[in-house]
Image 1 (cartoon, rainbow, N blue to C red):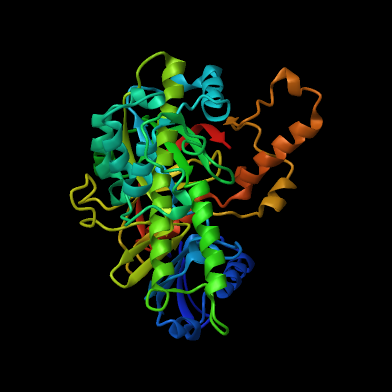
Image 2 (image 1 turned 30 degrees about the horizontal axis):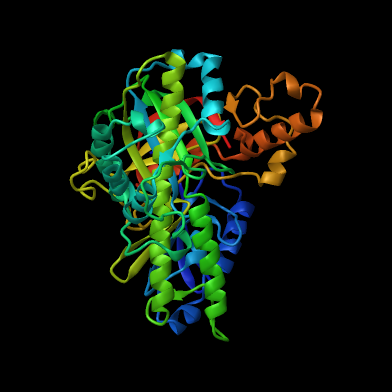
Length: 480
């Protein structure tokens, strides 16, 4: 019998027990570096107790890697408090996956697609026209509120929206596409002021920077036929994968909360612990603002999907039939009674029976796990591991820092990547400074900068965190 390919670790740091599933071939130095960052990120038991809070459990996933102030790939259950710094400013960041039903991979080989993608995402072609009522609905009531608002009047790209299809897809969202909140944060009052005037939105529908992307690919392997049928995909299906978050909304909530906590902190306290008991007003404001940002992230990925599908439609000169596989955040908190589950770069991966009323009720929660550019994406099914807090890795995880990656020689020139600037433009020939910077940016996200995707997936399968459903091979990637 072969030995399992995962390494299970139990560590004791900052007075807390941490369970880990480690990536295959993970260097010990890298794992210890991540643990050091986590030690600094976790408040001590004494600091938590001072605010009547308790850290119930901590786990790390195989894409665990160093980051300040909190490493990526961490799940933590906190009783009586929330730790906003654990989530940071990229609130609601997550993944979306759609199937393009009447498109083949061969049809996407044309360079015309590149031009339409660049125009829609970087050259003013998005045309996301929203009224004040629409914006208010997004932040307050998420995707259900947006769709209800759009029932009355739509303009721009949204005039082409199939509302019936969009309503049907809501059951294929984590939390049905909405995080409940009591109000809209005062910092968003101007943005969400109610009116009936359509204005082109400058925020929603944009990809963002860093490792966020839009990718078109195809299914080249199906590992679980029953789940694949529930998801509506098969071998050869064209797949749209989106990785993005809440943009300015999460940035504002994260930064403003940090500043308020530092200002409210008493001598001897750990400002990072936001107590439900002793700081009820700040706690309530963070929970509401956090929900506003997550709702904005759901809408942002929804709009990005519409824009990408519009690019394919313009390229092929036909209407594109499509449906959602799943959309879920992997950088946010979930409240359940007095327990707050924090996922910092970790996907929810609940077991069969958890998603009542969903097409996946008896299959487990879909997990969308991308690798680097060129390495593709795995669609997985959650197994609801209690040891690892019903969670999964959210990606391959960095192997090199961005600075280390920029110094590498090969950016992966065979990759088909669409960015704001066309490196083949005649205007850029001879501008070696610009071309060199474009290449350095590509190296930051090239395959060599990340762990191989299977080195993360296989240990989770062996540890019964997830199981394999389908492997997607990339064709073209859009990067901000």
